[in-house]
Length: 219
Image (tube, rainbow, N blue to C red; front, side, top):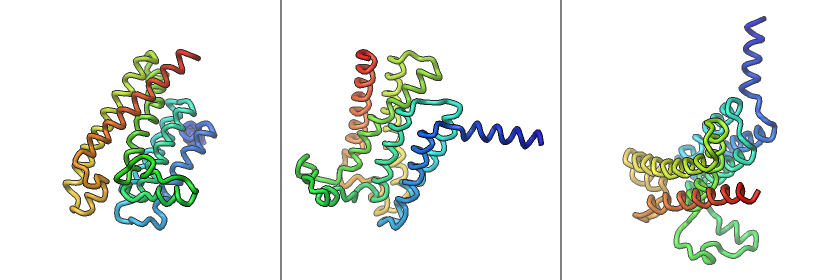
């Protein structure tokens, strides 16, 4: 009985997160699973979206030990939702033009002068915009860093993370078959695609850092 009580208490501690945060993570995991239902690209979509389940699970387990503001978790989940939507269509074929037409909105490609499907550009930008707040919050709350230093390190983390991901994509491309590799990495014939993706992530991170610092200054 004592062992059972200990197990129940420990399990409750692990699973005990604020309800709003639990809902966000549950929706994120559900979206990753549903994105694989009747996907147009069943060979490649799981490579994109199954890791999202691991990330959502990792966030769930970490929140009990290292709580974070709901706003920070919402930023992380927003990035994962955008990624999940892109992963369903392996990024290169996200039909946002059709969505805009169905809603009676102007064509994004025509309005922004886009010569290619640019959902991957949006997600790389959102990586910077969405992850600076969670990382800086964690560093300030659980490592005792000043908000300014925590924000700086968060920007550096985004830059490093973006570079590591591009290297991972390259390595995966080396070991995958040619057509599948090109479809997975979403390069769409642009030899400067990795550099542009990293630049957008960096731009998003700097913009998020400026916003966070201004929010503190004028609070």
